[in-house]
Image (cartoon, rainbow, N blue to C red):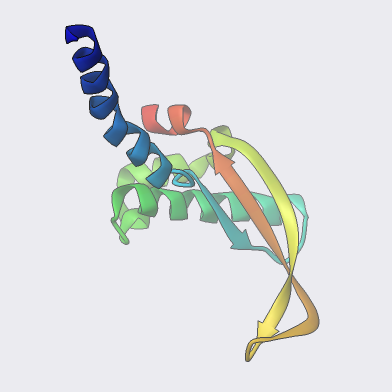
Length: 116
């Protein structure tokens, strides 16, 4: 009986942790619009994406003005885990158009970024 109570207690203690991890997914990834797939556009896009992620993590919309953020944004590629270019249709007044926009989706390495 004591063993069953212990198992139930452990289950309920772990329950909130599992729920919280689902809420935090996507914190280290974002998508930014880019003009093309050139190296220069990719570098600028990764920097913009990193700034967006830093704002998400800190809640500080003035993050770009912080000295620590400026240091991280000098070489944002060191934190990239994955990236991918995606074309998405333009929607105007809830209607799809024939136009497309190019986006750069970036996922940053949480461990590396947290240690920076």
